[in-house]
Length: 387
Image (cartoon, rainbow, N blue to C red):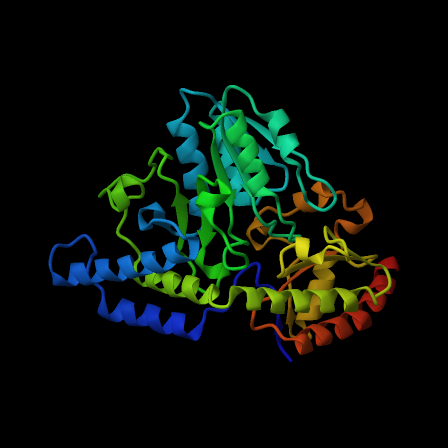
């Protein structure tokens, strides 16, 4: 049996998404900026995809800016906003367990003279809006937090944080990294008080190399890609028409019977958690057993006493089970996960943690097989490690 349980890293594209992407690549290959018929056809493909995405957010189509994915969306939001508001202030508030595509641009801005305040989170990965309020200053120009943590599945109270920011100073821009949230929960950025929101296509069974940034009307960013002035000058470059088409369809499909999909994933999560607790020495991270539905439905982080995560990962791989030891995007930055440290995972568990992440294609049988393999492998590997 093959069990792909690394959906927080990337998802299997839907067959219909693959079909549409290939079809558009072969047929609608005109440059969407061209004035002739083939250019107009490509522009129509982009318009249809934009309409599909805007419907999922209940927002105007003009608020959608296509990017190459979550990393570019986050960079565009952070660096673009900081530069556009540099005369007003150079203070940015974030959390201590953001994705690398957020904290790396913030390090870049720090080198440019910006001051970054990274707030702590509790053991369940939560941060109180009051904590954010205490960090805000007259020179704060941007607040950036993730909605769903990519390693442990913690869900932050972004609506509460948005209200706090607005109350303190409505001019502060509020950015949310929704890469792990979009398609897993209903998002209404305008109602939620979000100014900027980042999304990636390959997390929702869409193509890689495509994503979008939701931009509220009031937000102005400093463009750092200069060229033909596409997308209203907000992001120059010939649009990835096949990728945009696939993203639009994937977004639409992800939101069909969204509540039903959430219930299915939560059912899988509760079942898998019950199986994991049967394994001696196993601890679940950032998920209280009585509050499972306060976390993301598709991510489980578990620590296995006395077993190195990389060793266990490859032992599972030999049995056809594919999981992660943390954020796939952090693999180029080896070391202990900052997220696990942030939520207070004990030192002896930091190198013994795996992330299991599901999709609508995941079955209970796959999770039972995985749990059975873990029950077999963990005691053996723990004894081997102690030697």
